[in-house]
Length: 76
Ligand SMILES: [Ca+2]
Image (cartoon, rainbow, N blue to C red; front, side, top):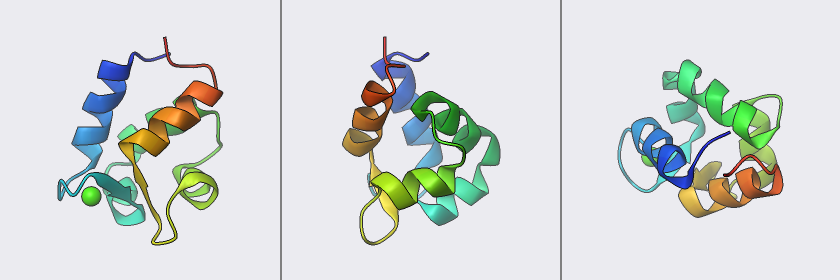
């Protein structure tokens, strides 16, 4: 379970180049954090998260991430 604030904080930490999107490379650079996001969204791996919900360029925005977490009912 996470609040939107916690999710935003996670997102910012993962978004190393701060372009507002989390890329597959950034997920690989922070395996611990990406595992948390994986758990929050109910998918088995960050890679799957990007494949299912990310943009065509293989990255995911905060809004997209938030939607996925909402659907997984983990956003308090
Ligand atoms: Ca980024």
